[in-house]
Length: 386
Image 1 (cartoon, rainbow, N blue to C red):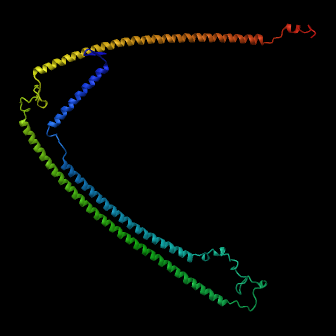
Image 2 (image 1 turned 120 degrees about the vertical axis):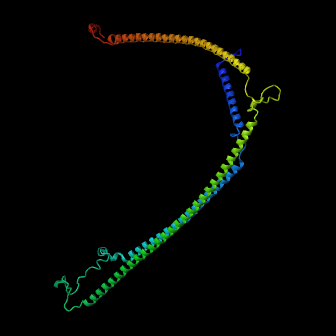
Image 3 (image 1 turned 180 degrees about the vertical axis):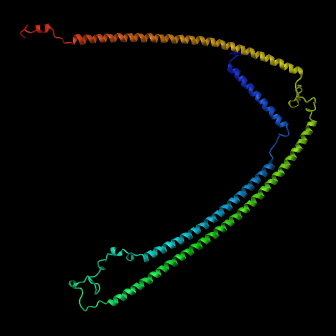
C-alpha cells in the first residue's frame, strides 16, 4: 500500500495512473508527428487527385478491354481449329469404316466355309460326297469280286474330263479377278489416304499461318499500347517534377516571410491571458525552465518517498505472511503427528486381535476338536446295562 495525496492507494491504482500517463504521452507524441506532417509542404497532401485517379481508371479499363478482345480472338481461333480437327477426324473414321466394310465383304464372299481346306472334315454332307464304289474303268479297288466293273461298259470319261477342265479354267479366271480386285482396292485405299493426308497437311499449314498472323497483330497492338503507357508516364513524371519545383519555391518564400524563423515576438492568445500560441511558441525562459526543474525534483522526491513507504508496507505484509505460513506448517505437522499416532494405535489393536484369534484357533483345533482317546474312554464299557 502507498499514500498518494494523503489518500491510501494500492499498487493497482498506481499502475492505472502510470497507464493513463503513458496514454497521454502517446497522444502528445502523435500530435507532434501530425504537426510535422501538416506543416511540411513537401509531405502534406490535401484531398485526392481526382484527375490522376480517373486517368488510371481509363488506362486500366482500356487494358482490360484489350485483354478481353485478345482472349475472345484466341477463343474463336481455338473453336475454328477444333471444328476443323473434328471434320478431319470424321473423314478419317469414315475411310477406316469403308475399308473395314470392304474387308468384311471380301471375307463374306471369298472366305466362306465351303472354300476352306478343311471343309471336307466339317461338311455335314460328307458321306453323300464320299468316294463312290467305282471310280473309272481302271479303279484298282474294283476287283473281280466287287461286281462293279463289267465288260463293254462306258463311263463317259471324255465328258468328265471336259467338265473338269472347264471347272479348272473357271477357277483360274475367278482367282485372277479376285486378286486383281484386291489389288485395285488396296491402290484406291492408298490413294484416298494420301489425299486425306495432303488435305490435313494443307489445313494445318493454313491454320499455323493464320495463328502466326494473329500473334503478330496482337504483339503489334501490345507494343503500341506499351509505348502509349510509357509516353503517359513520362508526361505524368514531368508534371510531377514541375509541381515539386513550384512547391519548393513556395516553401522558400514561406520561410523567408515566416515570423517564427525570423525570430519575431510571436502572436499570443486572443483571450488576453498572455498565453503563447502553440504553433508560434519558441521556448521557455530561464526562470521558467528553473521552476520546471525544481517542480520535477520535488515530484521525484515525493515519488521516492512513496516508493519507500510502499516497500515498508510490503515488508510488513511479508512478515505477516511468513508468520501465517509458519503457523500453517506447525498445524500441518500436528495433524500429521496425530494421523501417525492413530495409525500406530490401529496397527497395535489389529495385531492384538490377530494374536487373540490365533490363540482361539489353537485352543479349538488342539483341545476342543482334537478327539484324543485315553483310558477313560475304555473304562466306560461294562459299567451299565444300557
